[in-house]
Amino acid sequence: MVKIYHNPRCSKSRAGLSYLTENNIEFELIDYLKVGISPSTIKEFTKTMKVSAIDLVRKQEDYYKNELKGKDFTDDQLILIISENPKLLQRPIMVVKEKAVFAQPPDKIREIL
Image 1 (spheres, helix red, strand yellow):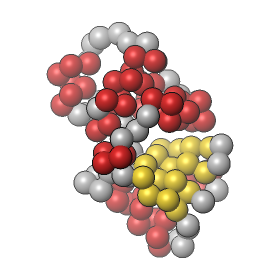
Image 2 (tube, helix red, strand yellow; image 1 turned 135 degrees about the vertical axis):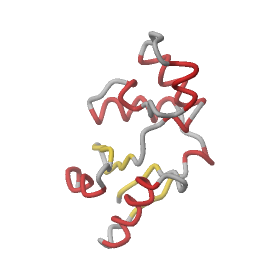
Image 3 (cartoon, helix red, strand yellow; image 1 turned 180 degrees about the vertical axis):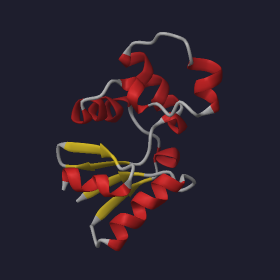
């Protein structure tokens, strides 16, 4: 089963959800803005996606532009910052077993199915 880390206000996230629905792919929806997202989950994303924490950050968010841009952080520091400010997380992220992908565009989910 696919887990989708979803923000219902994000058009890219809604497109990913539509892709799953239209293709009859069973999924678990995680509205991480409501339920939160743990540092351990974010750290797992970096491992399974083979990216650094900065790659998980939405750089167009005001919080990033005003508070983080131009500053140096370790991956662990950024992971904690993302966990405390989940709007910063790139989305949607889809996870299947030991694999994860940014589903932008939505058909990127095929890479991990």
